[in-house]
Amino acid sequence: MSERLRMAESGAQLLARIEGRQSLKDIEQHIFPEDGGPAQGDVVEFHGVEGSGKTEMLYHLLTHCILPKDSGGLEVEVVFVDTDYHFDMLRLVSILETRLTGAADENADGSESETEEAVRCCLRRLSVIHCSSSVQLLLTLHYLEGTICSRPSLCLLVIDSISAFYWMDRSSGGESLARQESNLRKCAELLNKLRRDYGIVVFATAHAVMRNYSSAAHGSSEPSGSTPSWKKNVMDFDKPYLCRTWQKILTHRLVFSKSEQSLEAVDQKQVFSVACSTVRTKGVKRCTFHVTEGGVQFIDEKLQK
Image (cartoon, rainbow, N blue to C red):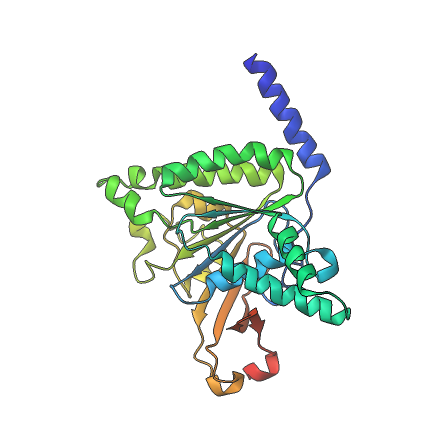
């Protein structure tokens, strides 16, 4: 019986790979390098201190995924795993309404009731799950494997945040680094399986709580001779501190910060910056943005000079 089950699971995995999932490589060209967006099976880390714009950018990309194609979206399904219990549905709806209203204005049609129904349709493509511990996160990822396998339209898995239980696990793990990182390592191993077998894209935020600590002290550093050049560049911004297993599956790293750019250039709004590094492209792509009631608004390159 168990052998048949394993064969059935392998067949389902093969079918998922053959059918494929919609690519997200063009999800936002302001952030990702040309031809360097998240392809099937990529893992993207959103790294930065609190208040650096990570969540707003996450909502921006999430909105783009669940919006219908006729409104400029990708029309794909998303699972959002909320480990910080900070998910703001009202904020997401506000951004959706702004985007949908803008698209309706361009087409010179669309009433308020139609916009509300369009928002409901978008939200049907979104599933939100809450986790309160690293063990619960691990069990949730195990549960999601069947969901991901059976739904080819599910293209994005969001975890906000992957570092939520870092201090809790450090405390419960005692002095053993292996025990401290055990649950996160298992989560990373399972995420690696999900993205490899099913082509799901993973977005995960990570709080920059260890920026001034030596990464070697926390087991996340590699020998200097074996560290990929793209990771060396990123370390100039914020040193990674999560376990090596997580670092190894990353394909993109977005480092967020509050920009020192003059506020006068953008109507007194706080300016945020994001630097993107990938394993497939050289260098770091940077862009700036500010946050409005309708979501993220990127700043024209001419205003950045």
